[in-house]
Image: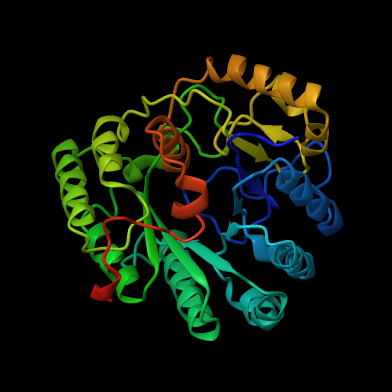
Length: 338
């Protein structure tokens, strides 16, 4: 049962050793046990059979799975399944797993890269994640690497420099905006009150940054995954989370195999479905029906992954899953600048 256009977003585990202020889902409990490596391999096979073009594999911290992660990466390599694997390369786990992951055929290593100026969890994970990507890239010539910058009040003055650092190391950058729980339905991040001084209040500075990032992207000066028009939308929606997705293009799978509305929002009835239900065409159609119903209840967000997926498909470009994500293609960036 092939799908016309499908991506995935996956939580391999809820476990994480970090305590980043803008993440509320870390170490949170599920009603069912987390999937085993064997079950995840089966899940990825189902996605492949559904013609899923790309798999965004989030954590929380994927290396917490240790041997299970190595087994999964080997399976993805053998089955030629495209993915981005998120990890902040925690020191002890990274030291233990880097050689087995290389031997397993690691294809991508991605990380959050929000600031180099702070010594809190956000700063530590940023430095560690960058170091892991740089070292792995030296070890694996073909490794695809990507650093995601979450915009907040602490890094608006730093973003351009961060993207230039990534470009210097031949690492693709991506920009996303800080979110918070508006209505109690977002389990990925906490309330605005909890986020405190991370929330952006200087709208003038934010708008100026969006304009600058569009200029740098259009001129091909930085390696950035987001297309220039994304920064126009970021200026419009980035501070108020007022954008709404419209189609179930991204199947989001929680660590126990249950389906979610998206990475940010668990949903209600939709969690009764699992990835293993989607082999049944009738259940897949029912899942999409429930997704549309529950998405209408969502107050909105501005998640870059979903916005770009819809932007590419609605502008008749079939490049987001097959080029932008698989090779971090940019029709603007000129590689001879490296």
